[in-house]
Structure formats: structure tokens, C-alpha cells
Image 1: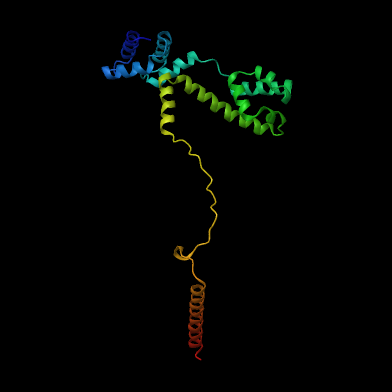
Image 2: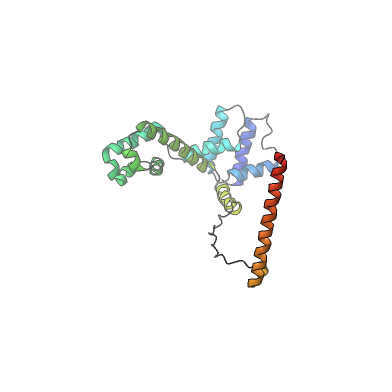
Length: 224
């Protein structure tokens, strides 16, 4: 709808709720128009008229968009209807004719069945659990579809852009290389045979000194 058509809707809303302060300034008018301008005027007009006819309080943007979405969306099967369609397809086609089974389902039901696994569902021995899993997935998918239809296109597009911008990319984790150990030399200098013997004598003296000290301590503790 264009701005003049929206202004006509705004006049209708304000006249229906004279005590409210809805759409009372230009900033509010501009923001509401931004959020509703993608809706065809005749649909928005009918949605506003429904709200005015059934509510004593003025509408908000979400309420108007929901009423408009109800007029634009295809009828959604109830959970029981969708599950009945799945059971009928199972009995007619089984797990070996999935494509023919999918052809008899609506898009929403078909997408849920594919996510849950057609073959697994056909071969399952626990129909009660399958029914519960299908219900949870179907109702969540139906709500997601409703929200998607209700959302303005520019909001959905911007949401996708922000997700790409702010969700960090997964960094590739490289497997650390195992380095071959090399013999460590004392301060990078290779010792001569004489130096090695001297160092061995020093280590032996240190061990003897430590042993003698421990022995004296033990004698002192026993009173000998």
C-alpha cells in the first residue's frame, strides 16, 4: 500500500479509538507505515476492520500483521489431519514408495516426515512415540511458517545479514604436528669423555650425601 492509503487506515483506527494516543505524531505514522507498507491495501483494510469490530482496544503492529497473514496463507491442516495423511500414505505405499507417498502430502507435512525419516517411521514398532514426535515437529514447523509469513520481507533479509555478520565462522582446527625429539645437549655443547666422567662422579656424590642425610635422620627419630 502507498502512504496515502496507510493514512486512510490510520484515520480509521484513530476514529475507532478516540481515547487512545495511537499514531498521534509523524514519527509514529512513519514507523507504522514502514512496518505495514508491504501488505496490499485491501488486505490491511479488511484486517483492521476485523480488529475494530471485535476488540475494544486499538491494534498494534503485530496484531495487524497476524490478521493479514491469516488472509494470505494457505490453510494449514490440524495435527490430527496431518497425522492421518501420514498413516494413510504408510498403509498405501510403505517404505519402498516414498515419492508417491510424499506426493499425497502437503508441503508442511512432507517436510516434517522427511526430517523424521520416512523409512524409519514406516518400520518403527512404536507408533505412539512416532505420533508424539511428529506432533512436536509439526506444530513447531507450523508456527515457524506462520512467523515467517507474518514477518516483513526487509526484516527477514536484514536478520539473515546480521546473522552472517555477527555469528563467527568456525575456525578450522589443525591437528598439531608431532615433532621428532632430538637429543638435548647441555647448553648446546657436546661434552668430552672426561667431562662426562666428572659429571657422573658429582651425581654419585650427591646421591650418597642424600642417602647419608636420610639415614642420620632416621637414627635420630629412633633414639639410636
